[in-house]
Length: 514
Image (tube, rainbow, N blue to C red; front, side):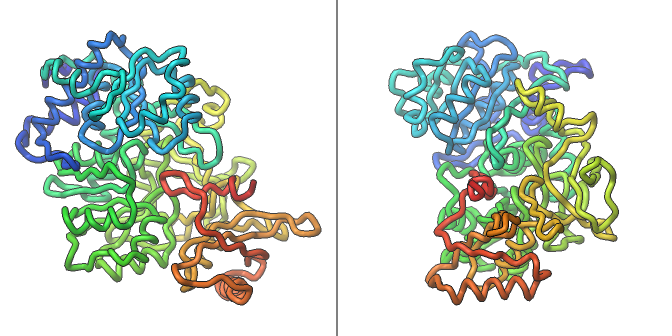
């Protein structure tokens, strides 16, 4: 297998994902981006050239390479090339600030940066003062004073012997999205990617070789990395890549033009798509599977999507620490308003504040055990010890389990509100608000009243052309009271143009609290 060691203890994720397709379907299209289409044989050659180009820079085994690339063919080529060469790529969010990238370069001690040319300007102010960075390579045409990735790859051989990596070696990093503050370097091992494909993508999502997949979530996210890289490569499916931001208009164009059979989105995008004038008719699309993660999907959004397309959205829970979805609805067991049941291969438990199991129907902190858990947080022993508890990983999410085994989201642990001595889930109140015809989306946080007691406050984004008014505010409060226990209604409603979010679509409630 193109240099893959045969000893059982050895394993290289890039070799596995590439070689299975090179042997079975070399001429089939693997990726389509805005520039062109690329067969699995062409992808394999690009991966080898990228691996050799990085090695030719003099990067030693296990050194870290920051990858800040838009979703083009260069992303899978560089990421898999680095892995094949025994380097450790760090895929970072392309939407971050100069200060964010400065922190990550210093924190990771990356020796090389591979960056798309439109993003280079964000790095320029910090490149001359990096203590560990030795190489900057640019993907695109405008390299400034740096070497072009295309030139380095053109000079490199398209044959490559894989590094003798082992199954438990560090394979790649992702930085946590920072929905609760400072991001952390999450270290994953060589086997993590294929395990998510074997446990979730193939049996739950049902991905097949003849699928055409499109993920609005970008490749640098844990969710997107599975959706658009390890999942399709595990079966030989074709993947559509979009380098620009996944606006409703851009996503609708992809759904109509390329007619993907599998679409991966996030709740805020599904909400925006349903409100878009560009939304394809059922006859204009070819969807057979849709998935959602990043934040719990409001039941009303799922139902309206199903009514429009005749295809359910399979909502699930995943995390950067677990790499992908470990709790999910399934095709014939889909219950909107829940995150479904544990994906086979993962164990779930809900614990109270004293670390004891809660009864069904009671809210508890969700912990998960499974083969895709990260090894640790880089250079953060305290956080690692508090999150990775032997085989168990703390999710930070609050959940309840129904009598028949469905898990329902109750908010982040630090987002939960105690109102009149009773826990209130902000997501529950948000879902009630979102079911009102005037509301596009909402976020709920705690705020102290005149007596210093915590009560719910709602930040509400209205649908287009819906005017703000005191009367509407009162109507929304009554709407919540009609759907939930009265003590849960928001005492204050503030209308806003948009909610603060991470690039994955997670609402940053800590910013609203601040």
